[in-house]
Image (cartoon, rainbow, N blue to C red):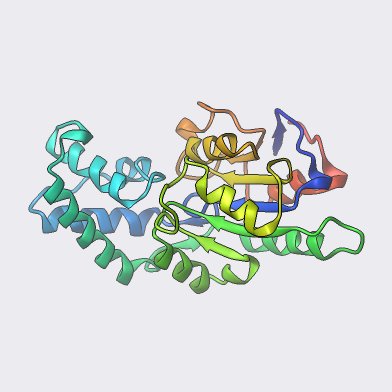
Length: 247
């Protein structure tokens, strides 16, 4: 189902930018396992998977900061910085080796990307570029996209360490616009959380929110322009012939 709150200028869109975790892939189990491995390494008790998954979206340091704070019963800003550095380093090393143990592309993602590529290649259509902008470090992000057969659909795959600032700062999205020659009016950010919607807003771009990811509990805190229930709905939301689909 596609819910339209503000109609996208579909025929003019040139740049489609996707979040990764909770949007293209379900990586929750591997992320949770890696966080709990880091907590165990630090001599701390594990956390429930759903709680850890709710912390995903602002990058690894914040994921570990929130997890350490929760386990210790303190505020995130009170976490010992040396402990945070050590736990984050352990997480990254563990996750590098286990990033594809349980991670998979959501149902319909590959088919939707193929359909969007066909729209891009259609005669007379507006040429479109697809890219990934995630707060996950860029090396595992690219490794996962390659391992799951997603990488070839994207001109660029950028991570949380590709730029000086992470989402929702608009630096990464604006850099993609500059590289592809797209204006904010010609750009849409597709993601599952408030972070992605705010990134789009901060860059002056459009947004599509995904109800099936990690962040639906806060997605509507900053409502997207369009809301979809499934990856398969991306095609309807971004096809000129299907503009304005309502519940």
